[in-house]
Amino acid sequence: MCAPKANQLVLIVLSKDHPRAGVYYSRVEFISPKRLILAAPISQWQVIPVKRGEIITVNYWVRTKAYSFTSEVMAFKGGYLPTITVAWPRKIKRLKRRNFMRVRAKLSVTLAPTGEKRIYHTETLDISGGGVLIKSPVRLEENDYVELQITLPERGVFNILGRVVRLEERSGRKGTEYFMGIEFAVIDERDRERIIVYVFERERYLNRRRLV
Image (cartoon, rainbow, N blue to C red; front, side):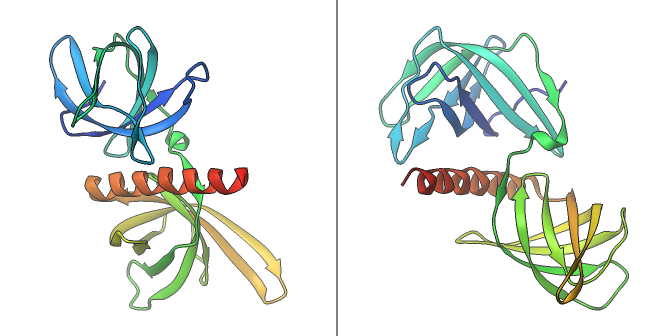
């Protein structure tokens, strides 16, 4: 099973027993045979303290596969670069692809089916680190490959090769509409990390709006 590596993006899940329960993105700062040092979780520029002895869950990705483990916090260090030290996990489990967190978002997308010269412009309905759901102006079949250009706010344009994994047709006033689930078949892992960060920031924003 693939273990996390230094400088890798991870997600820290604090249980419902923690006063700041939730999911926070972090990064692996240091690895040794017996421990991992992670960047402390931060929300709205504030460090979330984690006590020694607490059990946390850590999720991370290696290429297109998602993994998870639970571990005990050995130490918390504040200061300029706050960190938490956790014991090396005894067991790492692989998560199903759908375990990528998905969030509603309308993002500009350029769609170019492979083997065709025509380009289509549309938008996403939701997005995750593993793929997107789009409303497509053209019908494609499952397992068709498409070149995607997805624009993320303040993050630029991401070039991704996608594969159609789901197709749904709906009849509307303007005729038949096509909704396609597209997985990211070929993507720079740094771009995937940026998308994951966007997804969690977007989810937090939506949650705050629901509380207002």
